[in-house]
Image 1: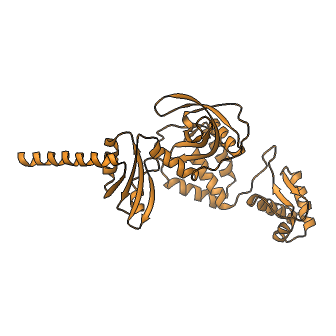
Image 2: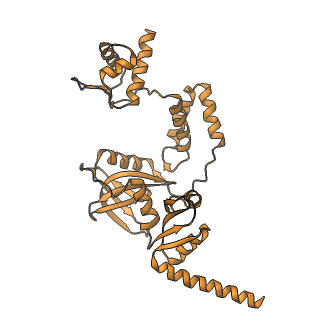
Image 3: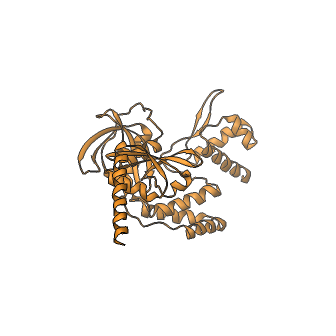
Length: 322
């Protein structure tokens, strides 16, 4: 009986680790015959695990979606990762899940062996979180949008733009992207016939979602597109600079929400950044402290020339008085 129970746990672990398995593959891993695999699959079903099977030579098994949540099997690294994530979620950028995260964390840590509890405590002791400034997203909104992305369902919502204007949007959501404390959804805007990025804390969804749609291919991967939109296209001026410094050094001063970096070689990189004024762009690029060249916009070159001349005249006046 102990051998059978251990084999069931091993079978469940395999089904959770990969989406599809053939009966022969499972039999090889478990060192049993295919008939024993079928009996073990039936035992898992009786315990509440929804294991789907497809017949035939190319058929196999996969762990399906059930009505209730059966127990999960986690290895040591997965258990530590979940515990740390739950602690982080209790003070994160998603509202409404703090108490739930703490309850789940309490249950998990109660079941952790002492060696893993010590690892979790050690990690938490040296990790310091910054203050929770900035907007947060309602957990129900996040779950609704995530579900629409996964199921390819259209979304309707009221949206408030960065300048305070209200609008009604109908989109085909593609992906969720998290940048710092902010959540964004990349979606195809049906009324504007173009890709758009929306901040979730400004979204008020309308229910129900739907109908279904055929997913489109975005112009770039979701993270790159959203980062470029947040740091560049949302502003009046779009800046492009050649920075004469290694990208790792520049990345220490450029956050994901303030600019986007592209490597050029070991000693230089490209920076994309936006601003609502040439003054703001000048201040931003100057504060980085690196040698640079302006590639775009050309208006900034003229502004910098005038700016440098004013600084030079100010220096000369100081020297004359001194």
